[in-house]
Image 1: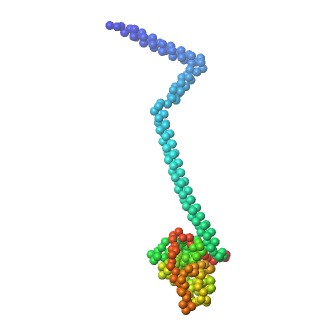
Image 2 (image 1 turned 135 degrees about the vertical axis):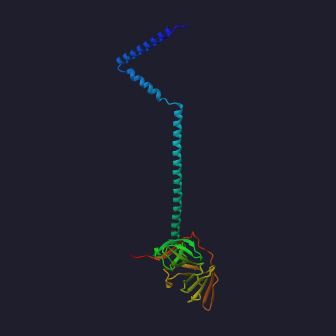
Image 3 (image 1 turned 90 degrees about the horizontal axis):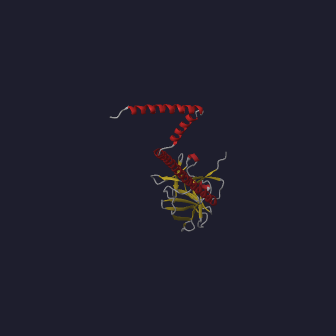
Length: 266
């Protein structure tokens, strides 16, 4: 049986060595102006500054998630910019079309003392009448002429409401219009929806009509061309001229229309 005495002696030796080393370190630290006690915590901080692979991976995943969020936000912003650019392009195209329509109108009209209100078709009601933009808000009145960008009459206003009006177009069965030709012969024009029936009211000359126009004689604001009749068969019987004209050109919701009005003097 081994004696336990050597083991006890080793414990005391280790204990005294620990006390000796502790005291030695304390003395060394004292005479070295605490450099030893400052050195050890710094080394501990240096060791703790090294990140474990798992921590690095977590940081990378966080950075990746942040980058993805930034990319998604940038993608949304770019899509919104594309939509804005498309809307701007459409507005620019509409403005370009309006300018071209005005330019064409200017080339085809002779009366520049009038104000020309741009308008267009809104819809067709249950009685097949066209509604156009603008009404009493633009001082429109029943009987006001409606012309296209070529300066030709395409109808006149029937009923006028606050912000829209009813257009009596050439294919309206309510259409009834009076006009003069270049020889001051007067004509009455009616429509059956498919054709215009042109009849002279009085013939000052028996010369065939070339073009008939609106005229202030009938309360029109000015002289605008209505129909070119040279290519149609003209029957003159008992000093009365009669012409039937097929309505070939129809208005569309893309038609550029204008309403000429006298300028207001303030």
